[in-house]
Image (tube, rainbow, N blue to C red):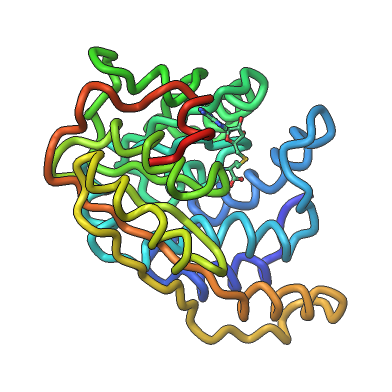
Length: 261
Ligand code: SAH
């Protein structure tokens, strides 16, 4: 079932940074279809309504483009989506930025298989999907360690754990961006010391702010859901890496969780 034009119009209003054309709109519509199909086989998302998917998955993923340094680094650089699950934020970013090279990592084999299938179906040749645990793929001497200009991650772990998982993948001079919701000040403060140990500057919180959108174009039963998503607090927490990560990091998952930095 394709996405009706009103949803694609809403998405383009909420992500004005994207250079919209018919191919991108068709790809988002096809991605919606593929997500429903994937979800029939395995549960990759609890959100399946059109407005829900367009806002909470598509627009939310594209909110990274509100941060201009992300957009410029992602266009020509190497990007990683750690803990991508069913493909967020990486797949919408690959649609929006056709020139980007995006490595999608997840520890669940079936999720990586669905990302590969969906990327192939949509013709997104910039996506490379890798199955593995972040703490193993980024360990000292591993090929993906300090390989990326930008690492992004959404809904994977609390920030003090996530920094240890993600910052070892970032090249010195690059950045890690965590996509977070409410209470991000507390989490950010708790992650500050560890970020320094991992080679990053102090994190900076960038609030996500969508442009005003005309929600009357949506069916009435979906307006409330859309309003509540758009009024909820969201932020991007940016860690700029200036030094190499010491070889002892990342530690094992058990150690990270038990005693976050
Ligand atoms: N980013 C997606 C999925 C979030 S669910 C979204 O926002 O929709 C969290 C995902 O992180 C799961 O798919 C899980 O398999 C993955 N994950 C959790 N810990 C991980 C680790 N240590 N290494 C790699 N993937 C991990």
